[in-house]
Image (cartoon, rainbow, N blue to C red; front, side, top):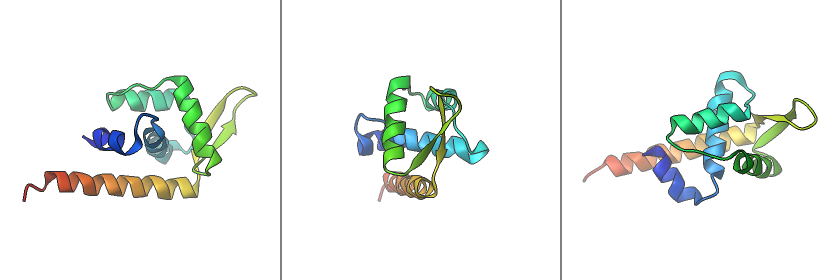
Amino acid sequence: MLLKIVDYIQGKSHSVDVLLAIHAISSNNGSVRWKDVKQWFKQQGKTISDSTFRDRRTELAEIGLVEKEPIDPLRFNTKMTPKGMKVAETIIDLITKLEEVEGDKT
C-alpha cells in the first residue's frame, strides 16, 4: 500500500521512490550503489531502469537532496544530504499519516 500512495503523489517519474530508496539504504551504510536501489525496488514489487534511476538521481542532486560520489570517471555512488534526509523523513511521515487515514473507517 505504501508505494500506491507514493505513486499517486509522484506521478510516473519515480522521484519519490528513488529518494525513499536512497534514504532507506543509506541509513545502513551511508553510500548507495545502483544495484542496491534496484534490489530495494524489487523488494517493493517494482522495477526501475538504470537510466530512470540516473535521471532521477541527477535531478535530486540538482536540488540538493542527494550528492553523487564518483567511484571512477563514469560511475557514482549516491549519498543523502541533510536536506534530503529531512525531505525523505517528511515524506515518510506524510505516507504514515495517509495510511492511518485510510485505515480509519469512521
